[in-house]
Length: 525
Image (cartoon, rainbow, N blue to C red; front, side, top):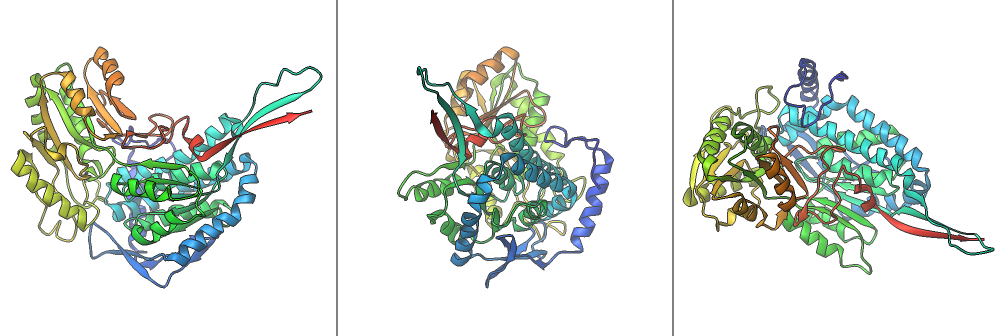
């Protein structure tokens, strides 16, 4: 069943029709009856199995085995890249209109399978049901938006001026060509959109793809990969592998068979990839999205209720495990106390638990490491400042088999403390008082990151904010999320400074150009 009269986005997901919940419940029951199966990689159009396996366990319940997946090795990496290399000549020469048609079929299949994939995603990553539905829907829209941009730009084939020569005809054209084999390495937190947004962009522009997903989210990505297969993408054009990033992923990065790479993940891992990928005989394109330490500034002229709601939603959606999560708030003195109080009140109303349940807003964090990190950060923040709410893991029958952490609001942490600079990727938000907006923007910009940012204030102050904030995505006066909510064609997503490498936002007008290189063609007659 698919809801057709309601367009789901991160802006509309807070008030869905009842039909959407009914469809999710039905799909969840089907999924729970099918857990524990083994799934292969997807290489050269076929299932591919490795000698070593790993279990994909749910963070909701550590005893729940969602599936058995392949622990990729060097031979698997080579086979996947060889398949992509072999398929590249035919795929790159396929008319772009045909590539668009196939990818639109894949997007339609994602829509048809929305509820099944979303139910798996909720169990696998711990997203609440609406965020799970939003992630899967966004992946289909990212693919469609890439197709739309190919059409709007006529496949990026553009006539240029003719040379002004008497008695001769000299015509010029610029043609954008695909690079070749493109590697996509995706994170756990948005397995559909951060796997298939980049993959769709690479494929529609004529590249072939090797996708390696996070070992925390192979089941969701496998189901998405089946949509591309069933849409008729030719053998070898799209390949999907699973395995540890430190071994299988590193083999792919170091391979000379890779012509370009898109990576989304931590700054530390991304910068290592950037340096390792540079160890080659020439420069190859790298698209990096490396997280954020996203600020929100609240003016004394801002709407406090709207600001508090937006901050809470952006800080604690997906348990703060978003590169766009609001982790820092700078409020002018006149509104600081009222804002902090209201954020705490709203946070106290959040339901934490099994993310497949309708009333739940926050599920578990992704794994044991995140759970341990939360405890370490909370202990440090209790020493450094005042924890107004949260700061503890959740125990008892309801929580005993999962990685559940309380949403946490902290104040009075000294401005020089390292956690104002360090991405925690957890349900923790820090609030500080500033004397004026100038100090707020100074502190907001005083980090290595520059992904998203939020602001609440007057119309005149909004323009000042846009002129001064150092971020690739800037939101103002938004109750739906202070620093979150990107959607293709509406709020393209990408970062500045240490948060991004190309300056071209995914789901935006210029993103596809990162997957293409230009050839100027002259015809002299």
